[in-house]
Amino acid sequence: MYRFLLTPRWWGINLFVALGVPFCLFMGSWQLDRFEARVDSHQERQRDGAAAAEADAAPLARLLPVTKETSGRRATATGRYDDRQLLVPDRRLDDRSGYYVLALLRTDGGEALPVVRGWLPGAADTAARRGAVPAPPRGEVTVTGALQASENQGSDGVHAGGGLPDGQVGVISAASLVNLVPYAVYDAWITLPEGAGALRPVPPVAAEGSGLDLKAFQNLGYTGEWFVFAGFVIFMWFRLFRREVEAQRDLALGLPPDAGTAAERVPTGTAVGSPGTDPAAARPTAPVD
Image (cartoon, rainbow, N blue to C red; front, side, top):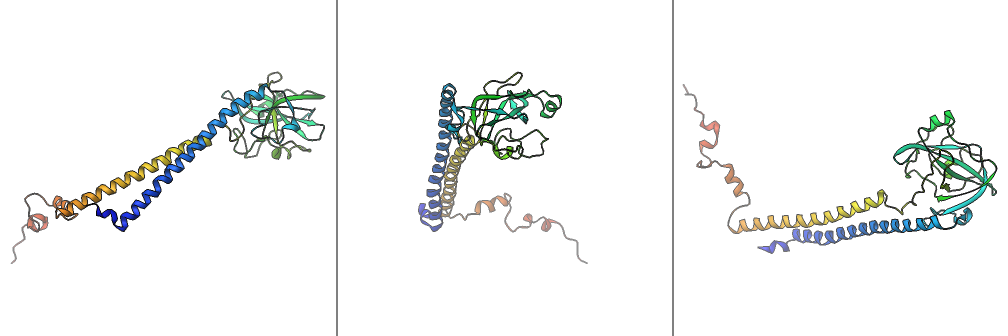
């Protein structure tokens, strides 16, 4: 009865299952490893972040370029603030909409360091009109804050579409700021731990790829999908196997594959081919003159 398993068709089916199931399990395990690696990275990042917050501040030059290890470290820089400040609109803090106040600290080396002095609620356009943004300190100052990598289009809260009013910027990055100021800008920024006046400090964010972001949960979702695919392949193999066994059993009993279906189509007690099977044949015919 099971000799059909040796036919070329079933050799192909069995080969597909033998290769497909391990492949699906391998891909599911790989995606699960990626998720676990991101979880470990997130936990390590939290430990490093706590240690970095307690560590002594280091000069900015020693922490550049920004990496996963240096992101969040306390950096210090000395210079003079540019009189012109920029507003970063559509930024949320504690589920409230507002904007960042961004100042540029021009260092002795000639480059400017973007400094997020804090966050204010409301719309940036309204704040600019009513002069609600506090001015930066004058003279030479030394600032200390959490070092952050330049933002990109995938960063949270970024307004990458352009079309912002004068005095606003949608992305905190050197690439966007060099078009607004006539001097070089560091490819990094810092956020101050304390805000002046009504400014609220902006907490640092985890380095890209080191936290439980959307990509991490995508890995977890892909894990489930690959394992479901493996189960589906096995399910379909058993379903085809069962149908084949039933077909072979019917043939052994002398029943053609469609015999049951044909019998169901014929009403009980009616002979196949009799007039009762054709409504047209049962109608009386008119006499012929």
